[in-house]
Length: 149
Image 1 (tube, rainbow, N blue to C red):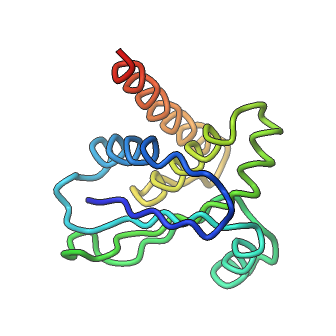
Image 2: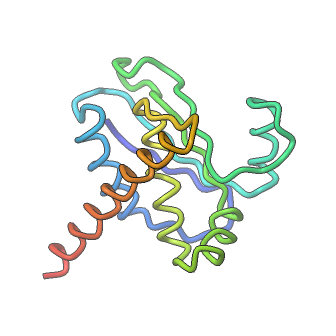
């Protein structure tokens, strides 16, 4: 599997960290040998509101949307797309008192887990999904510390 990153918003993206996080999630939740791609598209609130209206009939912005596009086994196909609002990530980073990069990575992990079949219909399933997000974010930080040596 391969990650393709597209930037349609004014933001500096942590591409190397996104790629490492992607690799960890694919390794544990999917299968690295699948021949399809995942597109990560970073947008602004206006674009995200339009997507949310078109696909969920909700006339408001959101932080992340994930869509399965093609069969995961399709050679050079697009298995899924993850849209992340950089505007929401900035706002939530301030609210949660974390860096913009950390919030982008959390949203990306959330989107990837949706593509891997995770969902949250209630508080309990949301807590399980957030624990899994934290597992992968911890793995990323652990790996960065090893790379720094």
